Image (tube, rainbow, N blue to C red):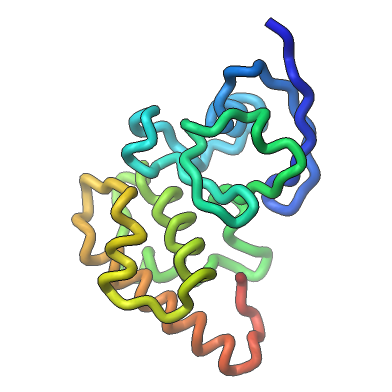
Length: 168
């Protein structure tokens, strides 16, 4: 089968890879680029464990063909934390005990980040709606929702203080 060369930007770094026309972005991320944060929970786009951002848009990497990211910007969970530390979403998930086994966590982090970039002051209902595509079988959702709301408050506070140390 012919292999396609794809040039993209992943987590702020220019990356090139080869893939077959039918290979998913999830498979390339995990098997070719060794970015194993995104998980395959279902393979049908129903669980959210494989969520990534492509040009700022939340997508299931198990349903996205790798060739589709040619010339685009991809953010995986590996690109969320900075050299300064964890993103507030990651820190608040830890503080609120909003994670256990870790299968759903990368997708929740990515989905929550996408929400907070779009809606800096979400209501609880908006958070629940936005994260509805992420299944968690360990924690229930209350701790996750509280963590996202707390992260939103912290990000707003940082932005009001001039944005010092505020990861986007």
